[in-house]
Structures are given as structure tokens and as C-alpha cells.
Amino acid sequence: MYIECVTVCVNYADFLAHTLPHNKQHFDHLIIVTTPEDKDTQNVCMHHNVECLTTREMDDGVGGFNKAKGINVALQYLSKRDWVVHLDADIYLPPLTRSILEKIDLDKQNIYGMDRMMCPNFEEWLKYITKPTPTHSGWVYVHPTIFPMGVRIAEFMNKGYEPIGFFQMWHPITSDVKLYPDEHSGADRTDVLHAKKWKRKQRVLIPEIIAIHLDSEDATVKEMGRNWNGRKTKLFGYSTEPPIPLPVAKSHWKFIGWVTASTVGAAGVTWLIINFEKVTPYLPFVTNSP
Image 1 (cartoon, rainbow, N blue to C red):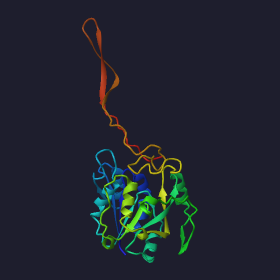
Image 2: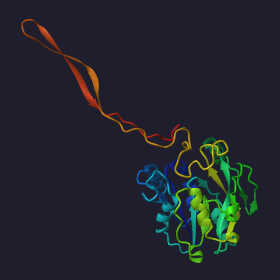
Image 3: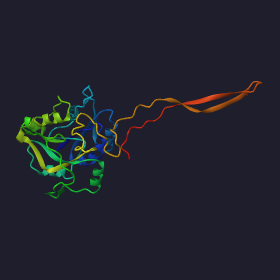
Image 4: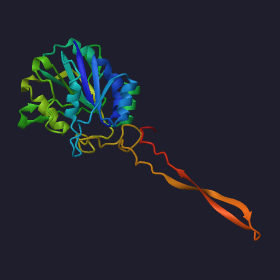
């Protein structure tokens, strides 16, 4: 079994720093896609020795965010000879994920999704990761009571359940689905269109695996899908502001002091000179540090 994965991560490095070290072990080839400006994501990938591609394809020219185009950039670099996974940057896969995928009977005619628990904030994540409660004990499934379960989307107009796009696993050769539909910029819409390339009976949940979705703000308090068209929520950490840079620093003249010149002439006139220096202040980027 050979599994390749693509993750789009734009201004999500604060989540990726927590999920990537765990998730990368499940895949034979993993590619992260971001923008040239997102240096934080590039640095996280470099630190964990994971391939990172940069592209401007996700910019729709009117301030929107087209996740599907980023996915398609990475898909061009995958062999697509066996299984392919699209995985969101804020999803944590449990430790037995790869082992389970290798042992269960997967049908190459299907597209697979999974359920997920909703971790509401950074503090709750720290409590879990320092004292983790296993979701599996050997091959005995442990009912998840760690976090609330995430919703499943059922759209009657689309004839039933559509695997939510945080995890979608398919076989490109058998299905002949090589690219993601990118005609819509909204992440929710493009995920549904991708799933609908398979018949209803071929859209299947993997019951043995339940992921954890990391949130910086409780999705039950604020509207669901705030980041579907680009990052708007606060950082996943101690900071409360979105991960955007501060204004560009501007140079100015700083008063240093008075300099007394030598006495001049018989009248003993003393000249006072004002001393300035040019200063360019350093404005750091907003960070995730406490």
C-alpha cells in the first residue's frame, strides 16, 4: 500500500506545527502547499523535512482563496499510482491510522472520509497531548469522549452524505479522478463537488478512525466555516490576533541632545547645535509566543 498526501496550508502554520509531526508518519509522500509570502509554513516544513511547494494559484484575483487550485498544484507532483489523500492542516490523525488503513478492506472504487472530534481551543489541546486518551486499544475501539463529535453534512439536494473535505482518500487510477474541481473558490463547495464524482454508495466513512480537528475558537460559539475562504480566526496558541504582519516600519529623525560649540568672538557668543540621528524601528511579526 502506497499513500500520498497533499495539504494546503496558508496562514495555518500555527496549526501545522502541531499536526505535521504526527501526520507525516502515515504517508509515503507528503506535500504541503502554501504561498510565497507564508514563510512560517515554509519554516515548519523545513524543520520537519517535508516537501513544500509555493504558488500564487490560490489567489482568485478578487481577494478570495481557492484551496482546490492549491491541491491541484501538489497533485501534479504525486505519482498517483495508488491511494491519494487530501488532508487539512488543522487535522490530527491518531497514531494507529496507517496501521488500520493497511489492514482494513478498502475498495478502490470508493472515496473515503472519516469522523472527527472537535478540540475547541489551544488550552484543551495541551491538556490532551500531555495526558492523551487513546482512541484505540489494540484492535478494540474506545468510544471517543475526549471532545465533542463534529457534524456530518447531509445535503438532500445532492442525494445524501458528502465526505467532509478535511480528509478525503481515493484511488486515482481506478476512479480516473486525477484533479480536484476548482471552479468554486469556497472550500466547502469544492469538497462536495469532488466527493460527487463518486456515486452515493461509493462515498464511505472509515469507522475505525476518528481524527481530531483543532480549533483556535470554539466553532459552536462563532459561525462554522469562518476560514473557508481564507484565515480569519485567531492564532492557535496564546496570542489572540490573526497571523497577519504589522505595518511596514518607517524611518524618522530622533532627537539626541544639545551640543555646545566653542565660544566665538569677543562678545563670547556660544552656539548651541541640535543633534539628530535617523532611526528605522524594527517591527516584528505577530507571533504565537506566550
